[in-house]
Length: 189
Image (cartoon, rainbow, N blue to C red; front, side, top):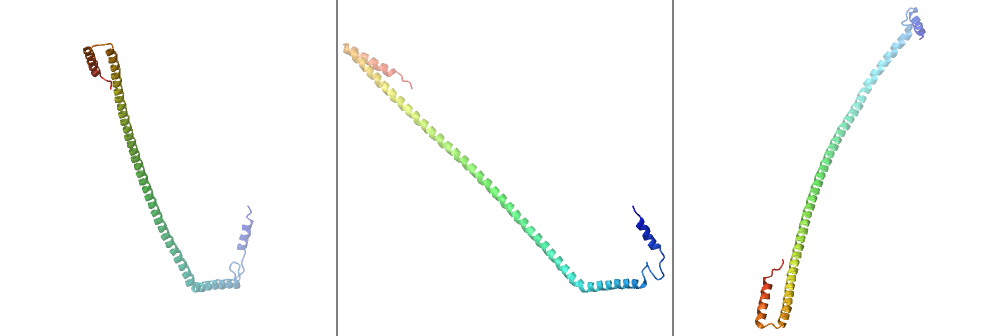
């Protein structure tokens, strides 16, 4: 590093100053500097006196405007928050209502399913009962047909037997025996 500039500055300060000079400045220059500083101070005081109230008023208006905007922003934020709460409440109500509707629909569907199953079971029972009644009727008809067939066969047998010239007593006795045998028979149910 070059410290040459420090040495030259020190030489300037330590050089002997001529009489009547401060810091190497002559008296006229010093008076001129003091007058300029005084002018600047007077001008600053005059401008402060002249412009202080208007600038202060402008700054107060600006401050009031900003505070008003902040208050308005807070009010709008509160409104937005309230609207959000209302929206969320409505969404909760809609969700609750949706759940109630779904629950009711499930209940209705379950009830309808049970009702349909009960109707189907009832119809199946009715069909079974009809089928059982039809089977019973067919069984009775078959039983009657069989009795008729047995009676016909018995009659044919009796005719054949009678045709072999059996006397009347024997014929009556055989007829009574056959009839009692037929009456004593049990039919399968």
